[in-house]
Length: 306
Length: 306
Image 1 (cartoon, rainbow over the protein chains, first blue to last red):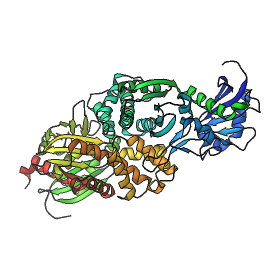
Image 2: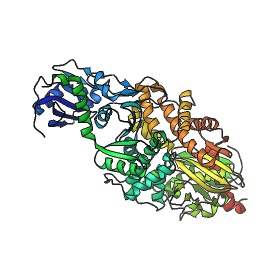
Image 3: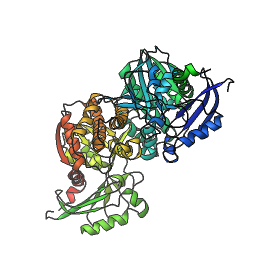
Image 4: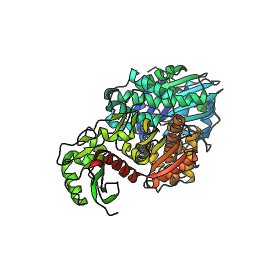
């Protein structure tokens, strides 16, 4: 961590995790705190004591303002920070921040909703990452892999549309609870292997065939064409490939793509996006949240920072 | 049940169910027996005692031949009846029957495998239903809805290709184990409602978008566009619609379709196939098995029947 004067506290408060940083006026992190006290935990313990505990760990002075993004602002969170609706400018996120009726100046950034009946969708936490990884005039796509992967279309700094794919969650429930539990080894390390790429290619070739290709994983092993050791990589390739095929069908391949990646999953997506001929830049997920919080904090309180 | 002389016993022995019929020489059922002693149960108790018990319930004479289809012929079943490989004539199924080394003349019909590395697939039990619902020169498609739905292409009585969709199983694991458990009520009665048809239409409009449309079910309820009471019907519509869209892309709509339907699920598929402009005939699933077993039994032993 760098040195400098603390000006505010930035917090990414998710469903099952808490990450906080003590930040300088220009958005440089000075200290960090992490915990498992996510929204679900705080539903029983309350949010204020968890925040107080983490502020103490950061050594944050009581008068420092605190900016939060993520599920703490959901209806079932601390207080609701109502969704902004697409189309919405990323650099106006801070205008939707809700002040929490608690000690000090604590505010929660809003999520973004696509409130139309045909393609309804919501995000909460990712909007702050989007702000963090884009310039004010950015035009292109952002891909945020995860339990619920997001593809976001941005035009000159305005979020115009987005889609959430249940890719990560489907991987888990299919591998654990369906007949494919016999075809996928648990805790298998995952790399962009030949088996993963084969899954990608199958999905790209016939992107409507996912629910049949899944059974094919089992059949291929029964018939001796594939090995159980490759099952998880193929399943991952099919699901990620199906996601990308639909995103490409929707947006084309001409736009630059920011991939907000983390660890092994980020590497799988990077390989998959390259396979799909997308013009991609990888950016770090945690830095994305930090920078988005910092940009919003500077909008909100920049004039007060000494 | 009709009267007549018993000539053989027909058994559909699945993963978790047992159904048997005492049959006349022309394939008319005289008596029926049912139980939950499927393959999984028999893996611990053995198969022979279960069969003896059900033959006694049927009042079957010991010298009557017994013909079995289904998972009893799997590798992990009683004895393996190796898969026939596509393309294969349905009226030659009996040639692949394996005799069980047990008291009396007991044979198990084979399953069918599509043993190619690109579209590997297997069936066991459904092949007997196919034989039961088609004439010797049938050309067209057969759809068998279920946990693992099958679409089978048949040309002049030859199974040329087939695809298994994990539709029913995905419905269960998604409704029970994913975030959509908050969007789907358990034990909801299912009919071809407007919500079901809306799911079908979404799938038909963009059949590559399933994994995103699933999240959309949750988002639509959060945003107030849809009701939880309709969640199961919409989920079912999305999954069945995706299956049918891929089957239609593969086979077109010009072929006659035999729908081997049972109960509420059969009615959902009937509505969905009509929506997709398929020329469909509904046939009863249990009669399909009975007739397929009877046709094969007559091939095997018809000369001996008095």
